[in-house]
Length: 243
Image 1 (cartoon, helix red, strand yellow):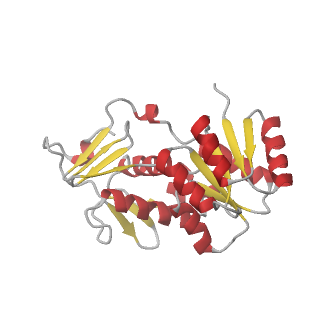
Image 2 (cartoon, helix red, strand yellow):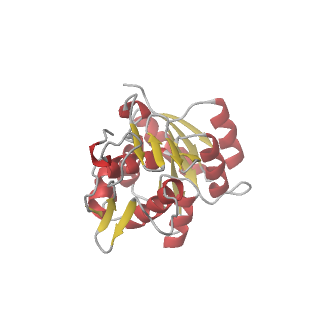
């Protein structure tokens, strides 16, 4: 099993040293930088499995750095923030982060979220022929690519895992907590805001009209349901497709 490589990005020297020391002691290979600019340069030079990224930094902010990283990489990103408002957390997720941890944080909580992020299924886990076809929608899980009515988008690792979980439970009402636990892990079962943000992101990529969802349907006060009653171009029932 390969050792995970982690990039710690924080302008606070003491916290950066603590994180690097803690993670190194647990067997991770850790690199630390103090700015968004330096982080982007490191990502261009080296491969990382996870990035811990402070949201408040001078110069290039954490949100700007996250967006720039996400435009070129599928690496897992956890944002570190002192902001505890829901809208700030949503902003972090909308920038492309896979999750966030609020400062001051418990080290065990941080480690749990790091492990959850690193558990995201790699593309190889979905096999060579994992393609979903529904009417005007085609999803290649191998390539992390969506073709919705001729509009091509790429899925982030978290979006991929969420969509895969939904489509492998077609026409089933899935409670919020069950989805969160399956995709993010047991420590996330109450983070409904995560789910709302990522469902909205998926809808923008797979729905003909995100405001009038056809595939990812909301079940009020309960959860979500993936409607797979359409047929693929070959005439197979969507519910029978192998994904």
